[in-house]
Image: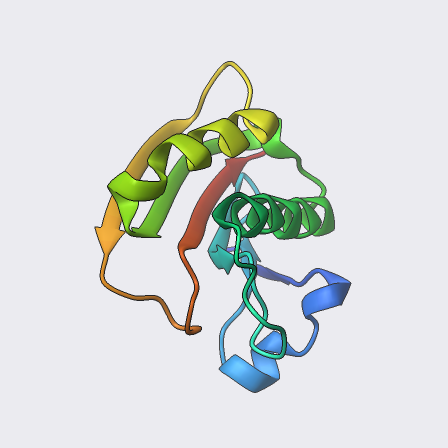
Length: 131
């Protein structure tokens, strides 16, 4: 049996496969796997307020989820990568709670020294499961 694999690309990020050589999302039928999502774009300046960047990351995630026909309620696993994890954790959790509701997915938070775009404080890695 051949595996089903469909690339998911939110219209706002249509250039990413060509520019960065990766798929923003891959739909396997039951699960949708999303590449790291940040709150900044390479052609934009980074927000000075961490919570603004965190909220934008979740808004961009929402665009990707919608392109796959799923929503935040379908997330089963969330991995977050943070620059200055402890410094910004309370702000991040407050923003995360605006988007992620019960039943909560699994969540792993990882502190890192830097992310791909200078000034980026957060990257989201999401796995969603279709009902």
